[in-house]
Length: 140
Length: 139
Image (tube, rainbow over all chains, first blue to last red; front, side, top):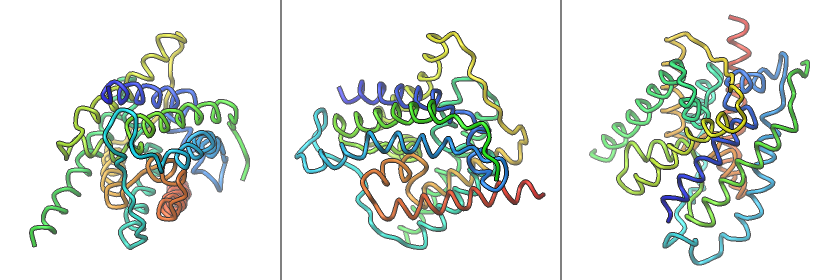
C-alpha cells in the first residue's frame, strides 16, 4: 500500500507544481529577481504548503506509527554546521543560474524538454559525486 | 524593485496541493517529502527504492495528467546554455546532498516542523539564489 501512496503523492506534488507554475524556471527566477522585476509568487506557494502541512506534522509526530508503514522515518538532524551553509550556498547558486530545483526539474521531464533533461542528468551526477566522497571519508 | 507577474491565487492554491501531498506522505507512509532526498536515495540506496521510484514517476505523471484533463499546454521557458545547465545541475545535486535538503525538504518539510536547521538552510539558499540572479544580470 505504501507504494501506491508514494505514486499518488508524487502525482499530487507534480500537479501542485503545475498549478502554482513553479514547474516553469522563469517563474522561479522572477522570485529570485528580488532587486529587479520581482514576482513574489513562490513565497505564496510556500505559505500554502506550510499552512496545510505544518499543523498536521505537529498533530501526528507523537503518534506511534504511520498508517501504512512500521515507523516514522525522517531526519531529525538539528546540527547547524559548515556543511549546511556550504551546501545550501552551492544549491542556491545552481538554483539562481537556471531557476530549477529538484522537484520542478524532474516534473518538467514530462514536457520532453531536452534542457531540463540535461539539468536532471547533471543533478544525478552531483548526487553520485557526493556519495563517492562520503564513502571515501568513511573509509579513512 | 517592481512587482510584476504576481499570481498569488494560483500560487497559493498550488502550494495547498503540494502541502496536501506532503501531509499524506507523512501520515500514511511516515516520511517527509524532500525531492532531492527521494531522488538521491533512489540512486544511491536500496532502502525504499521502489517507493522512491514510484514517487518520482508520479512527479512526472502529475503534469501529464494536468495536460490531459485541462487540454492546455504547460509552457516553460528554460535556459538553453549547455554549460550553464550542466553547472547548475551539478551545483544543485552536490549542494542539496551536502546540506541535506532542497526547496521542498528544508523549505517545506523542515520549516513546517519548525526546524531551525532548515530555516537557516532556506534563508541561505534564497539569499545566494537572489545574489546569483543579481550578479548574472550585471554580467
